[in-house]
Length: 425
Image 1 (tube, rainbow, N blue to C red):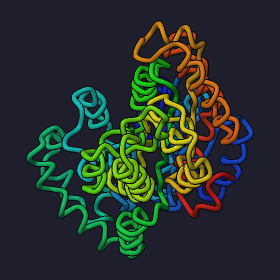
Image 2 (cartoon, helix red, strand yellow):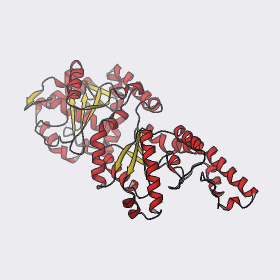
Image 3 (cartoon, helix red, strand yellow):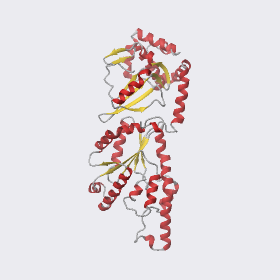
Image 4 (tube, rainbow, N blue to C red):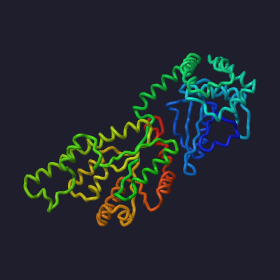
């Protein structure tokens, strides 16, 4: 759609225009070859988006059954492919159709055309047949003035002129094609209502483990890999101990409320009044736990999920089952289990594991024996929740690479647009 057949920059992304009658057959072939559908056409019926993880990166194919920019169609596949020529194994559209596409797409979706397009544009403008074809199609859409006023199309490289043309071109396309009005309404509905209903979702991944297991480095590496592949991410601390969201949580922290056992030698046992206050603070901590976790989710996670981001959670409510800052907890086991299960659940849970001695040497904040006991509890919780367990004995780049190699399809499927019960198919 955008270049000659011999262009060698098709390393990560490829745009293809296909006849509507051939679309489903092409999708079946690509899926048989291992590609995963990311966008199903639920938001944009004329576009399908597919991804394949290869050599530590996502490859991408966009299939278009119509030429559409900003939700507005200006050439259908039949007209666009008319006069296409075979170059190698690829059919390349008529230069005139390509020229019209570049002009309209630039005006509707870009601030200006990149300078490296200038030689290609200049070459096509020397082709009288291409210019005539582009003008015929442009006049049919009420856009003939784009070619008549500036024969060299210099406005494509001028941000001010592009900005001034956007409104008029949108109006012309809405007037030229009745279907564009329907498309415009559908696009607006999906962008405003569909997103709020999570019909184009992101998802969250929680990473847990004792201090020193490598959570910070792992999360930053995973974030860099995803961002480098065009998937926006956000990292949020989601542990139950720090960075409170609710005023009630901040107040309880000021009172020293926590879920720890009241030991035999605890100062709280010096008087009956102090013991009663200690029990009351613990009860209030548990009563406040779920409101705090859900408040964090709706304030810090859910808005990013609606924007189709992958939210990386540093810790999770399941830490309550393993202990308090690695300290074991015996009281209210059933309640802690219930609170963890009723907290917002990420789509993927990862435990970073390693030998206790290695973790202790990395961060000697807790005694070795305490780390060993914490690891046992973390492993039990990981088994109960079916977590992905990663032993952090190799560089983080290798760990993240292995995670993506094994689970990239789930990453794509969990961000797939459409109704929730259809996303994983």
